[in-house]
Amino acid sequence: MSGEDLYAKVMELAKRRGFFWPSYEIYGGVAGFYDFGPLGSLLKQKIINKWRRFIVRNHSNYVVEIETPIIGPSKVYEASGHVENFTDPIVTCLKCGRKFRADHLIEEKLGIDAEGLSPEEMTRIIREHGLRCPVCGGELGEVKLFNLLFPTQIGPYEGNKGYIRPELAQGMFVAFKRVLETMRGRLPLGIAQIGRVGRNEISPRQAMMRLREFTIMEMEYFIDPEDEEGSCPFYGRVKKETLRVRPYKAKEAGEPPREYTVEEAVDAGIIIHKCMAYWMVIGKRFLESLGVPPENMYFEEKGPHERAHYSSQTFDQMVKVARWGWVEVAGYSYRGDYDLSRHMKYSGQDLTVFKPYEKPRTVKVRKVILDRAVIGRTFKSEAKKILEEASKLPEEKLEAMASGKEEPIIAGKRIPREAFRIVEKEVKITGRKIVPHVVEPSFGTDRIVYVAFEYAYREKAGRTILSLPRDIAPIEAGVVPLVEKDEKLREKARQLYEILVEAGYHVVYDESGSIGRRYARLDEIGVPAVFTIDYQTLEDGTVTMRDRDTWRQVRLPLEETPAALRRFLYEAADITELGIPVEGTGEE
Image (cartoon, rainbow, N blue to C red; front, side, top):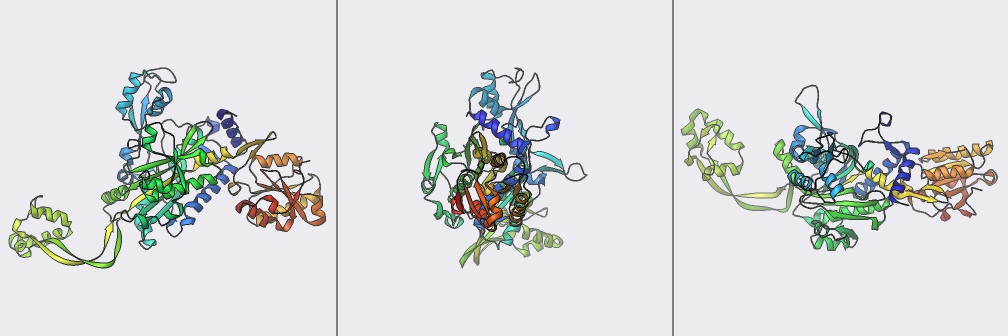
């Protein structure tokens, strides 16, 4: 089956059975927006909960989850650099007025990788190769930068500008100090968040691969930059595992990804920090648990001109899909102290962390003071105000004034040089202040839903089967009476349905049509197990349990079905372990 054919079948199934479809269809649709239907919403929530298990719950001594607003004041995104730097290149057709993402247009039409090039460089490439509008053939204008932030107004007052968040990170950085207090000031500290974001993409395409509104699962992992070992206490668990990695230099040379052990990649400086490598392993395991085989996944390093403005190193987690080949589903960035330092500067708040020494240290320090006698004689009634203002100034500023590097002006008055005194004294220091560095794994939820859906698509004996991993299947079990019109069988089937619902499972009850047709419907929406009530049930209280993927069946007591289903879904039990095997598929 070709990639186009598989994509068409996947999208047809997704729409027909209520997983996902383009938004606003009755109005012709709007690019970059998708709805999740009844089954799609359940699937998405299952994937989100699995991510929570991998990232938050499995690291609960260090990682916590919070929720912050979707809209933020302009100042937050000025501090983060998004107002200035969150841009993509745009080019306009001078004939029809259509606008295109310039780097994508160059790559599609010319096969040239234009990511990270300046607008001037892209304009030159367009002119040299005679690139025209792909719709009307008209001439293309100059490439310009387009800011992807969605602006809004907070409250009724004009000028009180805000933005819809383009990522989750800034809410976590702004809340860092408060969360740190609740965690007793300890590093490392991971702050996780799941939520909606908005990016005003120029020309969204590739269905759910590039949206204007979507869900992100993100974690900011705050570490002591001088304590790599203490920052990643889990590293020893994964250092012998392998990752398929394509460093930027290998990408430039046209070399494919290759396998490294985590230890090799870190020791060689391919991955610059142990914490980066650790979370990349967790991301690999997460995608594998959703059905993506290791050979269809690798990590690609972004070059200096491709990285976001805040990043010292970034890897994209790439997954192969049928129609578009390799697509990014997650990113891992070493953000350094960029974000906290910027928010300290713009807010004036102290976002440092105090790291105590094991034992207090006595050190000699230089201190600049103002001679009160000189200030009093010189400024008389204004002396008190000058001394108060001087006490608020940073030590470095006073030292610069004393040394003549800065004008000695305090409270509007020029201070005579003889008023500055530099003294040396011993002080006891109990610790130091640091600005934490940050490692960020960020996952695109909607893309991952599509990837899991495509990898689950199967065809068998003329039927469609959605072989989702059992623990993310939106409907966990089906209950069917063998014969549609037998009231006794229907009554017993409804009884089992209620038992499973009471046990906390998502269950569907189906009594319409032939038994084979009902099995086919449930296979198509990914139901892992189906329980059938037949005439033997009325005699001995046993039911059959059918495996979606193998079509094998076993017979077990009705009262054991909740426990058997739990083992089947969440303990990877083979169905033959759960009861007595039954010949056939039960569809005859």
